[in-house]
Length: 286
Image (cartoon, rainbow, N blue to C red; front, side, top):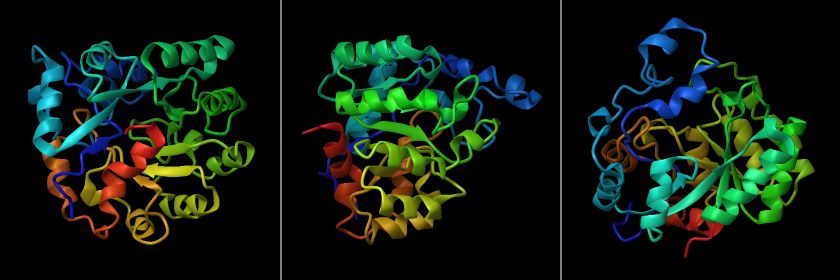
């Protein structure tokens, strides 16, 4: 089971800043009235226990560190595009590492931005939300190929949302089958999917068996909803391929996540890899 001294690496964590303005860039695609006008963030219809009481505090970095210490999270991967996260990266280099953004619509300028993030913040990975780009950019779109090549050149993985998106956007850009062509064309690429890959989790398992560089993280899901196919894979041939990621404070509290985790049916030898070892190796965390 979960050992208290593992020193968990959370590959998706953030800070309860003043409001939910970080989601504004996603609102341009939303068409339904409820998402546009009623929800504070676009996936509120899914997440019913968002820790909203923590938002708007004077020092959101301290709140996140308190929760990390409380639940044994040693390191957090945070977006270097967020100003609060930038401060956290400067003030707490022993607790936070950076993930960078990608800009498929900006061509060469987008690649330059990636390189600047790498130089300035020492990013350990990049993040892409294919359905969240406006216009959307599918996982296997030619606009993504310079981004994948740059990740290989810089020696860092890329996290890519795959499966049906939470916001009420079209899903085709994130079809899991699109990963197959990308991994074929970029055999050196390390790609980690975010947000579940549902309803194609069985296909995701097949693709992880096929492609050495393809991995899965558990972001955006309460542990009681982890796909059974992924749990079974981690317990058999995929112990090195599945990484822990939470969703604090965006949709879940660490209290809920850690409370649910103890009921996940991973074998004892899988837990250290899932909670720390796999991420440590891919992100270069000692």
